[in-house]
Length: 75
Image 1 (cartoon, rainbow, N blue to C red):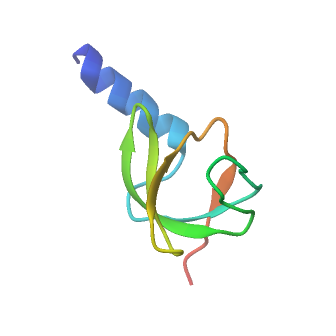
Image 2 (image 1 turned 180 degrees about the vertical axis):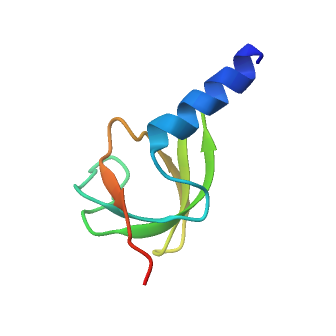
Image 3 (image 1 turned 45 degrees about the vertical axis):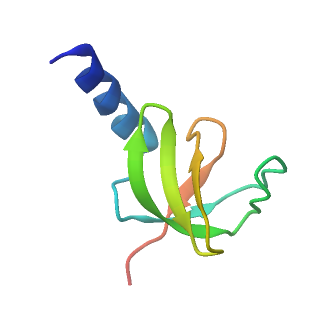
């Protein structure tokens, strides 16, 4: 595996979720304006963070180590 592939694999493992998973924030983030309880769908996972399509109508990347979240259980 090359270094880029290794970085992407590490990012996916660190994220703890898969693309298409709905996540819910566990705490507020003043910098981005996101608040605990905000929901979104994971669109992409990169070495820079988890890219989420938020239900509030925007797309934003978050750092899974700095912004806690959990996966919403499927119904």
